[in-house]
Image 1 (cartoon, helix red, strand yellow):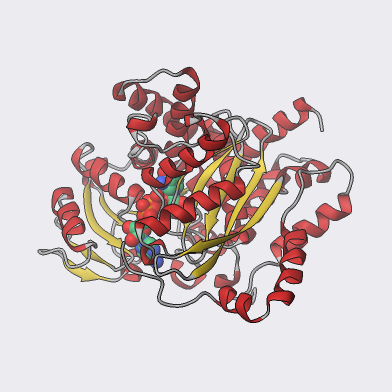
Image 2 (cartoon, protein in one colour):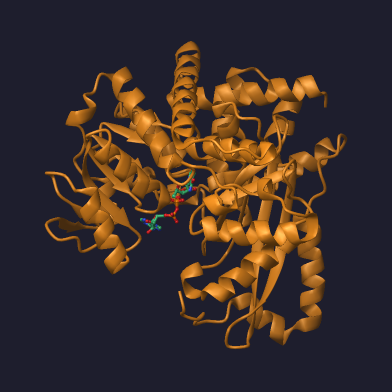
Length: 476
Ligand code: NAD
């Protein structure tokens, strides 16, 4: 955590050399990206926004890599909205993000140099309740990705039937290159810049990739300096600051419940399954732990950003976590074969659980996937052309917006506890989470059955229908 940034971000160099031009450009960029809450008129403006959003991809459209994360979400949304026969007006209203904020984050680094980072917060839809969604620190964070993730949060909260809308935020940064002090300054500056749009009844952030309970603590503290003690402004906090029992493991636990329900439905024997999991962070790590230590599932492969390991006889969670703690990576675990992340995805196994980043299963590798079932723990790991390949190969894909909803569900419990200034016991959190995951699974599968579509489009149908009903009831 103590290493410094090695290179000066391009934006910073530009800033130093062309100050006057930069001001102009920044104003123009701000005008483009900071949008006021949706106006009722302006159909044209919205069409233009949708068009520009889906054209945001920097890669050619012929390749599956060209599909931006937001393209994939819009595609799934459109399929669901068409099945529901929503009017064009309502479709446009619901799929368009409410508000998009891009902020410049100048940080004085430990060596005294000034670096400028870029952060985003996108609020997609709040028809069913305050905006809700995580904050990601990753070099690939950009407006398109945050927009896609914010939209997914709208559908996820609707599926879990928790009273939230959808949002997401992030900073384009590799946090491993920053010291703890730099990370704290960055988080506090980001919080101050988005302070005007977050709040316990407005928008409630949470952890996502490379952010954790410590980052949430700084965020809560910074917000509270201006607004008074406000634990409900953020979820995923440490217990000492009003976090909920069971929040940290909630996404992984939810995945385990969803896998159990899925195996019942498809007639697999849970205890005979060989499972491969990409990602060994919060979600992947807790999924490995709960599946292997509580559900008796054999986890045969695990990977992280540095590589993976495979043992057909199964990997013990205690060995895996010990390896990760002492070496900073699962790669190199003794008694297991070394594999790459690509090899893990294409491994001969029963269940594949992508639990790292988006865009992992694409047209160029989907054909080689041998798992019999895919459960999406990460957000957006499958592109829609890969989805079509899996449908052709009769590999069911349990979608992210259902499978990983355990995190936001316990975030809802945490928020409710904060507002009531009351604490739930771990047993209660787990029991309530299990109920939500089972009922969400049943509702998604019922929608898929009713409309004769995949579980993913069934999930979108259920979610879009709930959001459309709320929108109509509130009045446009
Ligand atoms: P994390 O930062 O705790 O862990 C990410 C893991 O992915 C790490 O093991 C990292 O080494 C690995 N990884 C990173 N880049 C990789 C790459 N290129 N190839 C293979 N592995 C790579 O993040 P997390 O909170 O566990 O989130 C993982 C996924 O789950 C994300 O898609 C996130 O949006 C989603 N998700 C998280 C939550 C939550 O509660 N944290 C809830 C819902 C969904």
